[in-house]
Image (cartoon, rainbow, N blue to C red; front, side, top):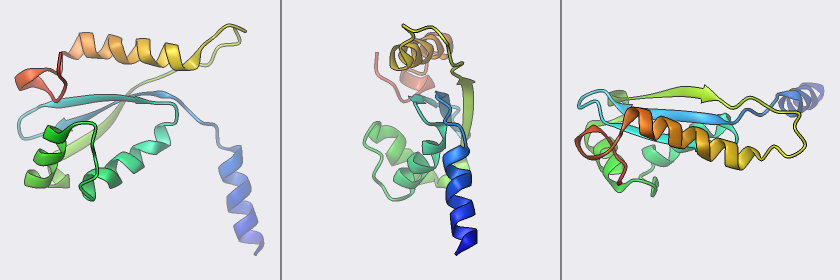
Length: 116
């Protein structure tokens, strides 16, 4: 029982990091760029892809079903730095960061799973 409490306490003490990630199809180099307020939720994204429940990009889901999990890699591109600024808006900052990566990597058409 004490071990369970330790694990629970450790989980609560772990800081939550927001950031931008990519999913890359290693067979055709197509990219999906996403952001999350908790990078630990990438495991949830992997689960949704494995269970055919990723509704954000049907094309990505279809290729994941076709090629399998070993054809894809997940990578954290950038972690959002916390700010002491009273007016800091994490959600807005995260959207700007994601937009920056979309502009940099251009994951559209043959290069990715996003629509312009």
